[in-house]
Amino acid sequence: MSPFQEFTVNPDPAEWWSAHRGASPIVGTAIHNGRHIRSDLQDFLGLSADQRLREEDPFTEFFIHDLPNRIVFHRSRFEIDINRARSGAIYLKPEQAWGLKVWAQQLSDDAIAASLGIHDAYYAMLETYLRGIEQQYSAFVLLDIHSYNHRRDGAEGPEMPFEKAPQINIGTSSMDRQRWAPVLDAFIEQLRSFEFRGQRMDVRGKHRLSGQGRADALRPRTVPSNRLRHRNRVQEVLHG
Image (cartoon, helix red, strand yellow):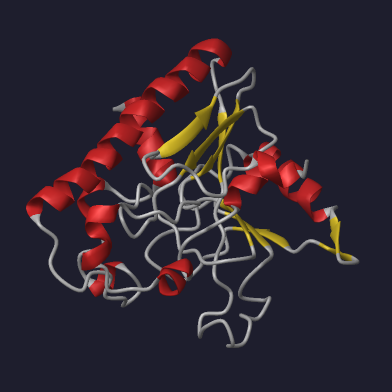
């Protein structure tokens, strides 16, 4: 059996997310991994699957599969973006989605409420999940894994120059960098020691990516991304 058969590449359309819990204080999340959009929204869509792929992060679940604690979100961020605050979690206007017109026609109030219900349910689950780890270990580390599109002009366009787009970006803009320097610096140096295709990995912290939000996650340089506030929502969940 191929080891790749263990991954949930095509999850049940009814599933919102998959969550695994084990004996570890480290948690991995892949919250933009999903591509599925529920059937009652299909006729409203103004973007093709390929167009949506530009800003989705498929296969980021592969990066966290070896962690005993991991959460993979299966719905497309174009249905509901749990990396944004509830008030902006549905892309109703092009300025919320890199100038893209996501919906060909206006969504009904019921459709919006159904999507926001997923957002609410996710963070209710996350609070219980993280509090359980906190009670067991007193603290935890959450690695929020994303990717980003380094061909901003389309699949046939030029790659973004490496000076503007490191292979791995450690988002630190919403944390106390000085306090966590001993952990972050060691982590970055360990990643830089890894060789890929005969070269050391280009790993940077604080590197800002263009888009709707901050670079608050570990991002492999593969497919689309511009991320916002999952880390901040985690802090809100824990501190109220």
